[in-house]
Image (tube, rainbow, N blue to C red; front, side, top):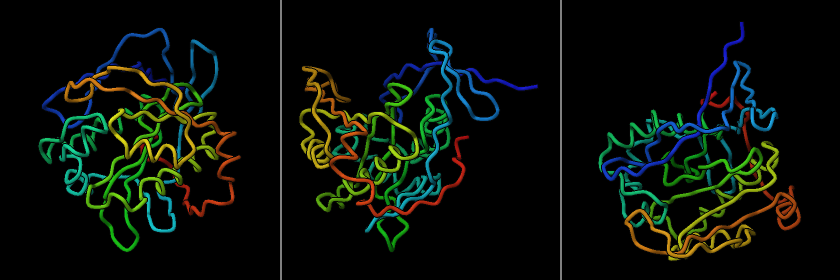
Length: 252
Protein backbone atom coordinates (compact mmCIF):
# COMPACT_ATOMS: atom_id res chain seq x y z
CA UNK A 1 0.00 0.00 0.00
CA UNK A 2 1.42 3.37 -1.01
CA UNK A 3 1.61 5.85 1.85
CA UNK A 4 1.08 9.54 1.22
CA UNK A 5 2.23 12.59 3.13
CA UNK A 6 0.40 15.89 3.06
CA UNK A 7 2.54 19.04 3.03
CA UNK A 8 0.80 22.29 3.87
CA UNK A 9 1.97 25.73 2.86
CA UNK A 10 3.59 27.53 5.76
CA UNK A 11 3.31 30.97 7.26
CA UNK A 12 6.57 32.52 8.40
CA UNK A 13 6.49 34.45 11.65
CA UNK A 14 9.23 36.41 13.35
CA UNK A 15 10.25 35.42 16.86
CA UNK A 16 12.74 37.86 18.33
CA UNK A 17 14.10 35.12 20.58
CA UNK A 18 14.72 32.55 17.86
CA UNK A 19 17.52 31.92 15.43
CA UNK A 20 15.52 32.27 12.22
CA UNK A 21 11.99 32.54 10.98
CA UNK A 22 9.79 29.97 12.69
CA UNK A 23 7.15 28.26 10.61
CA UNK A 24 3.58 27.23 11.36
CA UNK A 25 1.09 25.38 9.13
CA UNK A 26 -1.47 27.43 7.25
CA UNK A 27 -4.53 26.05 5.52
CA UNK A 28 -4.30 26.65 1.78
CA UNK A 29 -6.13 25.44 -1.29
CA UNK A 30 -2.83 24.36 -2.81
CA UNK A 31 -1.79 21.16 -1.04
CA UNK A 32 1.07 19.09 -2.50
CA UNK A 33 0.99 15.35 -1.83
CA UNK A 34 4.26 13.41 -1.73
CA UNK A 35 4.40 9.65 -2.16
CA UNK A 36 7.14 7.28 -1.01
CA UNK A 37 8.90 7.50 -4.37
CA UNK A 38 9.69 11.14 -3.68
CA UNK A 39 7.39 12.61 -6.31
CA UNK A 40 5.21 15.59 -5.45
CA UNK A 41 1.77 16.08 -6.92
CA UNK A 42 0.08 19.46 -7.17
CA UNK A 43 -3.67 18.98 -6.77
CA UNK A 44 -4.50 22.49 -7.90
CA UNK A 45 -2.55 22.22 -11.14
CA UNK A 46 -2.61 18.48 -11.65
CA UNK A 47 1.12 18.30 -12.42
CA UNK A 48 3.82 16.01 -11.09
CA UNK A 49 6.85 17.68 -9.48
CA UNK A 50 9.93 15.59 -8.80
CA UNK A 51 11.90 15.83 -5.58
CA UNK A 52 14.48 18.66 -5.75
CA UNK A 53 17.94 17.15 -5.36
CA UNK A 54 21.44 18.51 -5.89
CA UNK A 55 24.85 16.97 -5.20
CA UNK A 56 25.92 17.08 -1.57
CA UNK A 57 29.21 18.64 -2.66
CA UNK A 58 30.36 21.06 -5.39
CA UNK A 59 33.81 22.47 -6.04
CA UNK A 60 34.85 25.72 -7.68
CA UNK A 61 38.32 27.14 -8.25
CA UNK A 62 38.70 28.30 -4.65
CA UNK A 63 35.75 26.86 -2.75
CA UNK A 64 34.06 23.68 -1.63
CA UNK A 65 30.28 23.84 -1.28
CA UNK A 66 28.92 21.09 0.93
CA UNK A 67 25.74 20.27 2.81
CA UNK A 68 25.73 21.75 6.31
CA UNK A 69 25.47 19.51 9.37
CA UNK A 70 25.14 20.01 13.10
CA UNK A 71 28.92 19.60 13.31
CA UNK A 72 29.17 23.00 11.59
CA UNK A 73 26.98 24.75 14.17
CA UNK A 74 29.86 26.58 15.91
CA UNK A 75 31.20 27.96 12.62
CA UNK A 76 27.74 29.03 11.44
CA UNK A 77 26.87 30.61 14.78
CA UNK A 78 30.06 32.68 14.55
CA UNK A 79 28.66 34.68 11.62
CA UNK A 80 24.89 34.19 12.02
CA UNK A 81 25.07 35.83 15.46
CA UNK A 82 26.55 39.04 14.01
CA UNK A 83 24.08 41.89 13.33
CA UNK A 84 26.01 43.04 10.25
CA UNK A 85 25.37 39.62 8.70
CA UNK A 86 21.90 38.70 9.94
CA UNK A 87 19.90 41.92 9.52
CA UNK A 88 20.76 42.48 5.84
CA UNK A 89 19.94 38.79 5.28
CA UNK A 90 16.50 39.28 6.82
CA UNK A 91 16.70 37.62 10.25
CA UNK A 92 17.66 38.72 13.79
CA UNK A 93 21.09 37.67 15.11
CA UNK A 94 21.15 34.13 16.46
CA UNK A 95 21.23 34.43 20.24
CA UNK A 96 22.70 31.11 21.34
CA UNK A 97 24.56 28.13 19.92
CA UNK A 98 21.61 25.98 20.97
CA UNK A 99 19.34 28.07 18.71
CA UNK A 100 21.64 27.41 15.77
CA UNK A 101 21.74 23.67 16.49
CA UNK A 102 17.94 23.56 16.65
CA UNK A 103 17.74 25.43 13.34
CA UNK A 104 20.07 22.96 11.63
CA UNK A 105 18.40 19.90 13.13
CA UNK A 106 14.76 20.88 12.72
CA UNK A 107 13.78 24.16 11.09
CA UNK A 108 16.01 24.00 8.01
CA UNK A 109 15.35 20.37 6.98
CA UNK A 110 11.63 20.67 7.72
CA UNK A 111 11.36 23.81 5.57
CA UNK A 112 13.24 22.15 2.74
CA UNK A 113 11.02 19.08 2.96
CA UNK A 114 7.76 21.05 2.98
CA UNK A 115 8.73 23.45 0.20
CA UNK A 116 10.61 20.83 -1.84
CA UNK A 117 13.89 22.73 -1.69
CA UNK A 118 17.38 21.23 -2.10
CA UNK A 119 19.50 21.18 1.04
CA UNK A 120 21.76 24.08 0.06
CA UNK A 121 25.41 24.51 0.91
CA UNK A 122 27.89 25.77 3.42
CA UNK A 123 30.76 27.72 1.86
CA UNK A 124 34.23 26.35 2.68
CA UNK A 125 37.58 27.70 1.44
CA UNK A 126 39.68 24.93 -0.08
CA UNK A 127 42.36 23.68 2.29
CA UNK A 128 40.13 24.24 5.32
CA UNK A 129 37.00 22.62 6.74
CA UNK A 130 35.44 25.75 8.25
CA UNK A 131 32.02 26.90 7.03
CA UNK A 132 32.31 30.65 6.46
CA UNK A 133 28.93 31.27 4.84
CA UNK A 134 26.00 29.72 3.06
CA UNK A 135 24.29 29.73 -0.32
CA UNK A 136 20.95 28.04 -0.87
CA UNK A 137 17.41 28.32 -2.16
CA UNK A 138 15.16 29.65 0.59
CA UNK A 139 11.79 29.89 -1.16
CA UNK A 140 9.87 28.20 -3.98
CA UNK A 141 7.69 30.66 -5.89
CA UNK A 142 6.56 28.22 -8.60
CA UNK A 143 7.31 24.65 -9.64
CA UNK A 144 10.23 25.95 -11.72
CA UNK A 145 11.06 29.22 -9.92
CA UNK A 146 13.26 29.32 -6.80
CA UNK A 147 14.71 32.18 -4.77
CA UNK A 148 18.40 32.18 -3.86
CA UNK A 149 19.97 33.60 -0.71
CA UNK A 150 23.47 33.82 0.76
CA UNK A 151 25.44 34.89 3.82
CA UNK A 152 29.16 35.28 4.53
CA UNK A 153 31.37 35.87 7.57
CA UNK A 154 32.62 39.50 7.56
CA UNK A 155 36.25 38.35 7.75
CA UNK A 156 35.88 37.05 4.19
CA UNK A 157 34.05 39.98 2.59
CA UNK A 158 35.58 41.57 -0.49
CA UNK A 159 37.16 38.39 -1.89
CA UNK A 160 34.47 37.44 -4.40
CA UNK A 161 33.51 34.25 -2.57
CA UNK A 162 29.74 34.84 -2.68
CA UNK A 163 29.52 35.38 -6.47
CA UNK A 164 31.74 32.33 -6.99
CA UNK A 165 29.59 30.14 -4.74
CA UNK A 166 26.28 31.47 -6.07
CA UNK A 167 27.42 31.01 -9.66
CA UNK A 168 28.13 27.32 -9.00
CA UNK A 169 24.74 26.78 -7.35
CA UNK A 170 22.85 28.63 -10.08
CA UNK A 171 24.59 26.70 -12.84
CA UNK A 172 23.94 23.36 -11.17
CA UNK A 173 20.30 24.24 -10.44
CA UNK A 174 19.51 25.31 -14.00
CA UNK A 175 21.07 22.09 -15.28
CA UNK A 176 19.66 19.59 -12.79
CA UNK A 177 16.39 21.05 -11.45
CA UNK A 178 14.91 22.14 -14.78
CA UNK A 179 14.29 25.65 -13.48
CA UNK A 180 12.90 28.39 -15.68
CA UNK A 181 13.93 31.26 -13.39
CA UNK A 182 15.85 32.09 -10.23
CA UNK A 183 14.91 35.12 -8.16
CA UNK A 184 16.82 37.12 -5.56
CA UNK A 185 15.66 39.74 -3.08
CA UNK A 186 17.58 42.18 -0.90
CA UNK A 187 17.05 45.44 0.95
CA UNK A 188 17.86 48.74 -0.69
CA UNK A 189 20.69 49.47 1.75
CA UNK A 190 22.40 46.12 1.05
CA UNK A 191 24.78 47.35 -1.64
CA UNK A 192 26.96 44.23 -1.42
CA UNK A 193 24.06 41.97 -2.33
CA UNK A 194 23.06 44.26 -5.17
CA UNK A 195 26.57 44.02 -6.60
CA UNK A 196 26.44 40.22 -6.38
CA UNK A 197 23.13 40.20 -8.27
CA UNK A 198 24.58 42.42 -10.99
CA UNK A 199 27.74 40.30 -11.32
CA UNK A 200 25.59 37.20 -11.81
CA UNK A 201 23.50 38.79 -14.54
CA UNK A 202 20.26 39.31 -12.59
CA UNK A 203 17.82 41.98 -13.72
CA UNK A 204 16.17 44.33 -11.24
CA UNK A 205 12.46 43.67 -11.79
CA UNK A 206 10.82 45.57 -8.95
CA UNK A 207 11.50 48.03 -6.15
CA UNK A 208 8.91 47.72 -3.38
CA UNK A 209 9.09 50.86 -1.30
CA UNK A 210 8.91 51.24 2.47
CA UNK A 211 8.94 47.64 3.58
CA UNK A 212 10.29 46.78 7.04
CA UNK A 213 13.49 44.85 7.68
CA UNK A 214 14.14 42.52 10.64
CA UNK A 215 14.72 45.55 12.90
CA UNK A 216 11.47 47.21 11.85
CA UNK A 217 13.20 49.94 9.83
CA UNK A 218 11.58 51.15 6.63
CA UNK A 219 13.55 50.38 3.48
CA UNK A 220 13.11 49.38 -0.15
CA UNK A 221 12.74 45.71 -1.00
CA UNK A 222 14.49 44.95 -4.30
CA UNK A 223 13.46 41.96 -6.43
CA UNK A 224 15.80 40.55 -9.05
CA UNK A 225 15.27 37.79 -11.60
CA UNK A 226 17.42 35.61 -13.86
CA UNK A 227 15.98 33.43 -16.64
CA UNK A 228 17.57 30.19 -17.73
CA UNK A 229 17.80 31.53 -21.27
CA UNK A 230 19.73 34.58 -19.99
CA UNK A 231 22.11 32.43 -17.97
CA UNK A 232 22.95 30.30 -20.99
CA UNK A 233 23.51 33.39 -23.10
CA UNK A 234 25.56 35.43 -20.63
CA UNK A 235 27.58 32.69 -18.94
CA UNK A 236 27.56 29.60 -21.16
CA UNK A 237 27.36 26.09 -19.76
CA UNK A 238 31.00 25.16 -20.32
CA UNK A 239 32.65 28.21 -18.76
CA UNK A 240 32.01 27.28 -15.12
CA UNK A 241 34.45 24.70 -13.69
CA UNK A 242 32.25 22.97 -11.12
CA UNK A 243 32.84 19.45 -9.87
CA UNK A 244 29.90 17.69 -8.27
CA UNK A 245 29.36 14.26 -6.77
CA UNK A 246 25.74 13.18 -7.10
CA UNK A 247 24.36 11.48 -4.03
CA UNK A 248 20.90 11.26 -2.58
CA UNK A 249 19.77 14.35 -0.68
CA UNK A 250 19.62 14.03 3.09
CA UNK A 251 16.15 15.61 3.02
CA UNK A 252 14.49 12.79 1.06
